[in-house]
Each structure stands twice: as structure tokens, then as C-alpha cells.
Length: 170
Image 1 (cartoon, rainbow, N blue to C red):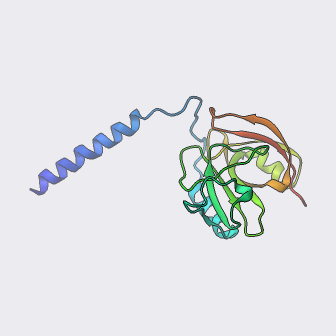
Image 2: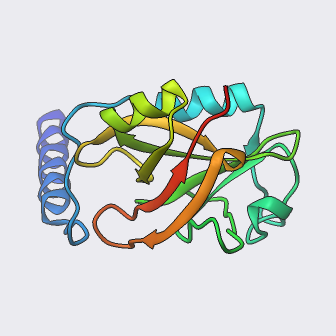
Image 3: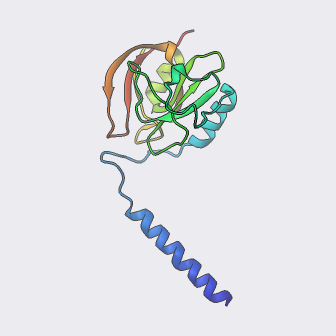
């Protein structure tokens, strides 16, 4: 009996792995060039920002009009239009936080050289992706108040990126 259960488990595990291998990634997706503790980064940001996930009742409300102290996810990341946030994360969805003081922050990843410029407080044109991808393996938080201008470049392919110019204060 025990051998049969182990054999069944092995068959199920093999089928699961085969199914995962057959899953097609979006066009232009490139896996990250380095390992990143993305989940740990998001957990630390949520704790530091003192935010909770939006409720079902709050879902769909633009992030800048939702309750302060919440976070949620969106595919429709933009700086020129209202960004609705939702409860459930999905592949290549951005995580937005509305801090308790009402400020809006977006989490994402950038290339190492861009992260250095951002950290130094220099002006930088960023291509932000919603999770580690290709060379964008440095997790960052970007405050809306630091965005100088949106470049109106958004791609739902090639990493689901958004581009904008930013300069952190001090």
C-alpha cells in the first residue's frame, strides 16, 4: 500500500513539473540574470510602510483615492491616469502602496546602474518592471512625489514596464 502511494505521488509530481515546463511565458519575457529575494523585499516594504492589502470593497479604486495605509496590485501602471488597485497579485502586476500619510509609492525592479543613480539622488530615466526580470534585478520603491515626468512609455510586453524620469529629494 505504501509503495503504491509513493508511486502515485511520483506520477503526480512528474505531471506537475511537465505542466510547469509547458507553461508559455509572455512574449519578450527574460528571466532575471540574478537571484532576488523579491518576496522578502515586498514584505519588508509593507511592514516599513505600515500598509495592509486592500479589501474587496476597496478594490478597483484608484490608488490615490483609496484609503491611506493600503496596498494593492495593478497591470495598468501609469502616472498620467488613475491607477486602480486590486486585492490579488498576478504575474507582472505592479504593487502600489498608499502610505498612512496619503503618499503613493510603487514597488518594482531596475537595472543596477539605474539603482545607483537613484540612490545618489541624481536625475535618472527609469524603466521600472513589476518584478525581477532580465537585468532589472534591483528592488526599489519610487515615491510619486519624486517623479519629474512620465515618458508615456508603457509596455505590456517585454516585462510590462513603465518609463519615467525621477529625482529623489536629498
